[in-house]
Each structure stands twice: as C-alpha cells, then as structure tokens.
Image (cartoon, rainbow, N blue to C red; front, side, top):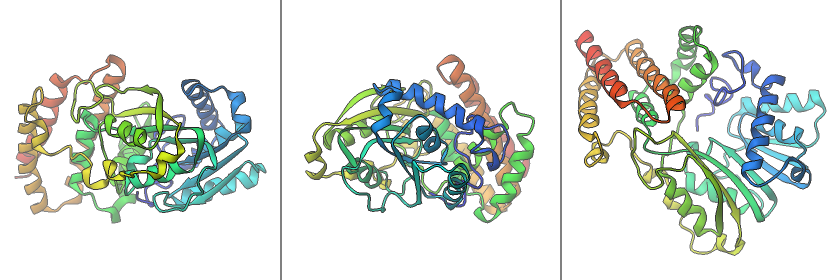
Length: 365
C-alpha cells in the first residue's frame, strides 16, 4: 500500500461523498450511506442488525465503515489502517463524538500481530488486494476469527477490462513526487463530471497504490477453504476460474466465508496461493493467446509497447499524465456501461483504446 495515497489523495470508492476532497470522508451523509450499505450486506451474510449487538468486529479502511458498524450496534469495532491520515481523522472524530465502541490503530495488517480467536466478524471491503502480500495478510485476519466467525471479503479480481486499463496506468509510472500536482489536475478535469469524487479518488488509487495483487476468484476460494472456511454467499463470482474475461468479468468479487474448523488454520499453510509473485499480470500477452478476441488485445499491447518506448525517451510527466487520464476515462466509460448493461462493450472500448494509443504516439513523434 502507499500511505501517501490513502486518506490524503484517495477516499476509497468515493461512494456517498459529495466533494472531491477528504474533508467529506466522515460527513453525516457519507456515514448514513455506509450504514445502509452495510445493513444490506449483513443480510447477505445471513445476519440482521440486532445480531451485531454482541459482536466484536474488525474493519480496515477510511473509518466510514467502522463508524457505520458502531452506529448499527456492534459491541466493539477494532479499526486498522495503513494510512496515518485515516487513523488521525478517525481518532479526532471519535474524540469529538465521544464514541467509546471504536478503537483505531495505524498498522500494516500483513505484519501486525493480531490476537487469535478474538473477532466475530471481519469486514474487509476492497483492501486485501493492496496488501504487500495478500495471502500472508489474509491469513493473519483469518486466524483472528472465532469459530463460526464470518469474513466479508470484497476484492479486486483479475481479468476485467477495467484492471487491464488500470495495469496500463500503473505501468506508465507517474512520478509519486508530483502526486499533489496530479491530484489537482484530476480535480479540475473531473469537476464537470456527475461524480467528481469518484473520478479523483479512483484515478489516484489506481495510479499510485503500491500493490494491486489480482487473482481469479477460485484462488480466494481455494485459499480460505484450505484453512477450514466454507463459502456461505458470493456475488459477481462468474467466471469463477478464468484469469481473463474482458467482456463479462466485474472488476471485483464478494465472498462471505465462515470458519468451521479453526484447527485447519494451523495445518498445511499455503499462503503463497495469493502471494504477490503470483499476481496476474494483465499486460502479459501470453494471457490472451487463446482468449476470445485475444488477437485484438495483443495488437493493443503491441501498440502500447511502441508508445511506451517513446514516452520513456521523451520523459515528460505532462504527456504521461495526459495518456494515463485519457485511458482512465475510457475505463470509466466502460465501467458505467457495464453497470447498466452487464458487460463491457468491447466493440467500442478496444478500438477506442487502440486509437488513443496510436494517436498519442503519432502526435509526439
């Protein structure tokens, strides 16, 4: 993870936030939105709000979910986050609101020594793929659950068109030292969008997160299953075992797993199933050799490689940013269409991406 991004330049999904700045992260409207979302997610876990009353809950993130869980009645919420900004902001909120049912700690959960068997529920929403070692961090979380405890596991999955674009943005290598400048630029460019915060937060998150470990859904299922967990519900699971599906694969998957056999947590550990070194490289041409429309993707990657050579030679952060933001807009357009139609319109997106790459190369050479 990148501590500079989270809490300062990225507010997570941006859902429920009205402005493109972090001052609105813990606003009453944002917290209310998360209370409603978590209430719905509790139902998906087979729980009701009343069941939270006796629960000790672990949460990682901006602090919104922790407050929402507490407001919904959780006995105690232990909040952890890599970002000092997020933790400091939450501490101030807890002090000003005189909330005693939340404790917060700045920590890298991959290496933080969690006590075993202490939590009834772990709520992780879009964070595990940003661990330096997803398997090691996730196993640390799993060991902290009580028997019959539940984990809400929302993760970015490999194979979607959106992560294909995101991998290209990360591969460009925007300068971290100029992160504030990029933040201001995206804020200005996105000011006319219907959801400016989502544009700003998503771009900063996808361009500058230190780790973006991507695996197919079956890898997560195999991982938790070997440690004594059963899957009790899922969402956006299909395709379950395919590393690439640009047309139908949603950019994220939700699994809810319950600990049945705590003893398995300490038998035959194999956390390398989700190790950083095995993360799927979305820009690897071999991934697309036998894929539907794989020839088109390989052609796009071929054009991108030629462009990247030119970008490296020119070494202009302005041009690099312009390209990154241009293809980010293609991703956003595709994702909104996916949410409406249930698939990525590759007849539009592939030509648009290829044209963007070729036009920029022709313009700067």
